[in-house]
Amino acid sequence: MLAWHCSKFAYRPTSKAMETAEEVDKSWREFSEILVILVTVEMDDNIDVVEYAKEEIINMANEVKVNKILLYPYAHLSRELAPPDMAKELLSRLYDALKENNLETYLAPFGHYKEFKAEVKGHPIAERLRIITKDDVAEVRRKAVRKRYIIITPDGEELPPSEDLLSKLPEEFRILVEKEALSKPLGEVKHEMLEYLKRFGFEWEERSDFGHQRLAPYAALIFEIATEYSRNVIKKLGIPIYEVKGTAFFNMKDRAVKEHADLYGDRLYKISTDRGTFVLRYAACHQQFSMLSDWYITYKQMPFGIFEVADSYRYEQSGEIELSFRVRRFWMPDLHILTRSEEEAKVYLLKVHDIIIEEAKKLGETYDLLVNVVSEEEYRRYKEFIKDIAKNLGRPVLVAVYQTEGAYYWTINIEYHIVDYIGRPREIGTVQIDVGNARRFNINYIDEEEKKRFPVIIHTAILGTIERYIYMLFDSAMKMKNKGKKPMLPFWISPVQVRIIPVNENVLSYAEDVKNEIASRGYRVDIDDTNRTLSRKILDAEKEWVPYVVIIGEKEKEQRLLSVRCRAANKQSVMSLEEFIKILDMKQDNYPKKAQCFPDRLSIRIRMTS
Image 1 (spheres, rainbow, N blue to C red):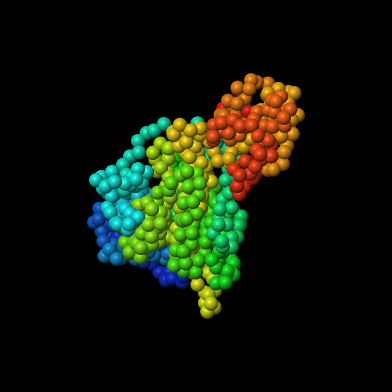
Image 2 (cartoon, rainbow, N blue to C red):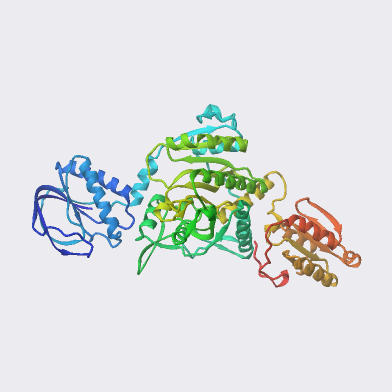
């Protein structure tokens, strides 16, 4: 906004700048003692920016002591112009907002070339430039958003969080309450897990932007297995699932895309091309919603899910970036469930909730819940629903009821937090009920009466992002270490599941036979055939958290047996190959199998761990 305090200002439209512009009177319009605001509406602007701009204009008008405002559309203050229909709408809203504040307000025609004459006063604040961005608004909103916190016990009590109550809460839940409701700082701690993540090949790519990881072979293998497992988990819901693939770039000139981005907030990752400004998706919503809007759906197919493991981008603050937890580029196994009503959505939210809790338990982790509700009215509607969740969970839950009005596409959003091995609440998964985006993206279905309806949509990534699920895997290992146990990953996702160590070259052929048989069953197995001592080979396997180390000497070769060191049990046993494979089958259970993507002999393998 370029603001001029004018003693005189006049303009007249000369011709249309766009075919869709309305017909207007082309005679001169003249004003005196007026504040002229030349306004450029930019790509990222939204209704929140309009509200902020209104306050700025009122303040400027008060400073120069005028009560007369002319809003003058002026497309020359930026190269990042909003789509014309949105620019016109936001200008109209700004005009209405100023009139509601008892300012004599005028709006020059939109979409026309205009000639103007101006006499600008010469005092120090007669000419001023104001640049208002969504980031400015976001900062104000962050400071302004107020929440009322409530603790709901398994017995259904509603308690206000307080210092006196803390000692009566479960320890991990207490930490969540202290951080979220009481705003206590976490303090600095030594983050030992980072060294283990790096040992397995999770690293920052220093030649990229902040927050972009690279994955060495072990890390890439862990990532791919976790990704495949995310596909398996969603099948537990018992509904049809449609997996799709798509792009990460969405045009901000599209109204639905822009509105969704505006509602999402201020962590948008954007890129400009010769076609305009694009937002990089922050979940799979854009692609899935774009597809769904083209599908012909009836009540007979519902409920169903649409799924994509989506590369996603969020412009996290560089100072808050954390390896495998808070990154700018991540992968979201994003599932949207389309339901016919809010009540049906609640049923499936609970199914999702149960699976989320179950998956954490498999890793020895316990989730504590932060339930966000957008208003007091929604809290009244969802109160009994939340109480049932706390009752079934057998643990208290923390509820945040938003007190500040705002635009949200969801009614209830549940965050699932672990308290990690160094005592920090870490949000891993979420589930939320979306009541707005179906209409926004024109996603509809035909009901039993042949009427068009808009579905209610559940958003969830049951495991969390792939990166955060991996963080939880390593957190579980670190908690083992804190208890005096050997840290390890679950057998099914360990990069090397079995390492065979022949004590000399004489037994290498038998070791090779054993390796081939184990590999034929789908397990990841390698042979340490390097020219090193047995103790050093065992030490390296320990450093790589290999679950089973098979030592083969002359005796084992003669008797066709195996000497097996089990990391979890911390003991060594002698058994046949058939007995060992039965143990592997039991440990693998129904988890996905994936072949290793590196040589199975260590003597020819490039060193991948420190």
